Amino acid sequence: MRLFLLSLALLSSSAAACAPKTPTALDGPDRQAALDKYTELFSKQVADTWNPRQALADYPNQVLPAGTLTTVVWVIVDELGDLVVTDIARSAYGSLDREALRALMVTAPFPPPPKGLLYRSSRGLVAAFPMQFTIQVPGEAGGYVQNRFNVEGKAPQVQKPLEILLEL
Image 1 (cartoon, rainbow, N blue to C red):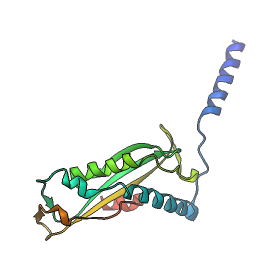
Image 2 (cartoon, one colour):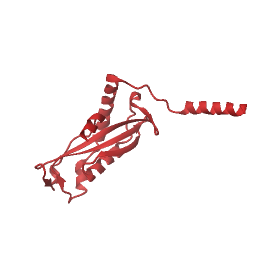
Image 3 (tube, one colour):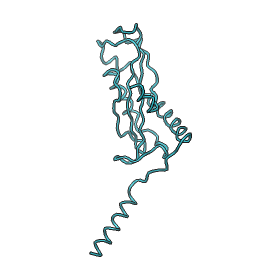
Image 4 (tube, helix red, strand yellow):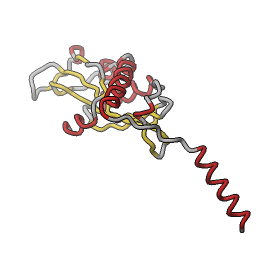
């Protein structure tokens, strides 16, 4: 019995030593500065691979509603910068949603997030944030257009979660 308890204590202490430690969280302005710096770099990387016109060219007979179309994707990266999960939070149009996901997958892996932005999850240490992909379709509000050559894509940007939740 004594040997069993000793081996159980050794096993639990070695498992705790192997588990990833939660980094010291950043608070206030330090956290926001680190988040802004990281998400700006992240957004620039994805902007280089996102091509909304190609997504529209894949569906030549597609008719789009005039106005602003926005897809919001929740992105989760691990402590190494590997893409863990992507999920559509708000869908603009199927082909644009697919292009947003494609751009993220092609761009990965990303730079490792700053330690203060990571939190512990069932997938280890991760950072999560929403990314917004937007296009402007010319035409009168309430109308539809088939000419996709005038569509103007904006650079994708990581958004503050609160801003996205208020929009939804």
